[in-house]
Length: 100
Length: 252
Image (cartoon, rainbow over all chains, first blue to last red; front, side, top):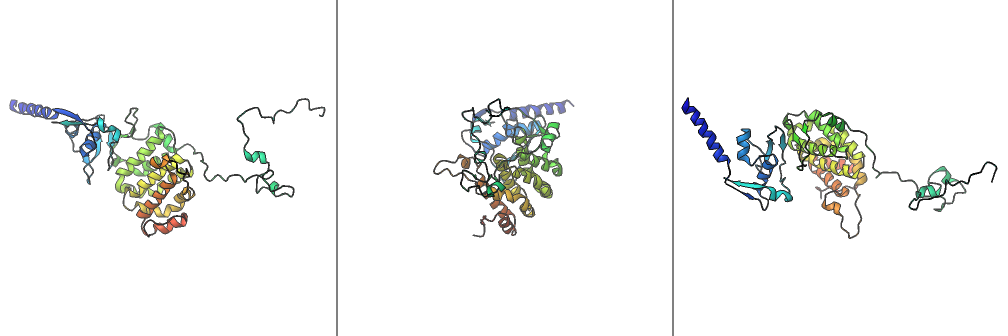
């Protein structure tokens, strides 16, 4: 039993360690990664890793380009995203790109 | 002056500097009226003025919409947000689980709205539902025609712009939607025919509505081309029937 608990603790510690980013840069120009970060940060998450830790489910993506399609916010509401670019030019520098 | 006329009649005197009476009132007789056809009426502009405008381009008011009623009653599964991220709707329910037969016509009904927040929620709601509706859109098409027709019939430039963009989105939202719209051209296209050449002649000035994609004439041309591209083989002849000045974008 004790071993089992230890394993769980190890896993949670490991997840937390993975979840903490080492550094952050701000986007300078638009790219697919910036678009990805923009969509997650609009919904209130840091990025896909944090989303999957909190929501514990797969991310809905558009099949043709892999952009995020649907996200659930922390309050349970849903955000739906378009097939094409959504991040406007004025919001590019607000997007944070995290490095783990 | 008779016995009873003790007060001078000042009612016809104008006291305001900027007040101008409309030209039709000054002229007295409107063209094509019985008075204008009488013998002593001279056909010069002093006596017989211009005919009254028929009002084909005049905006018409819309009554209260069902969308507004439902929104105020809180019937829509959308969350209200008052923050700066104002270009998205937070849905309380997944769109895939919504009853399209109920909600899509209601959101289309809201296209007649011109005030915030109704206008925003209607526009964005329609956008999200069309983007993520897939095969659920096609069976609802017949229920969308009357709201579309009402919105276009308002002849309000802002409403028409939104509706035309929605129509362009609608025809590409799912397979066969363009074809399904062909029988309803008679309801949709008359207003497009009226406004097809509604472009600003600004000489060599800059028409900023072109940049903002709010130029009615251009939007109508784009919409008709989208109808033709996605409407199948009968689309062009049906468009031509309702909008005689339209030229095909595919045959030439």
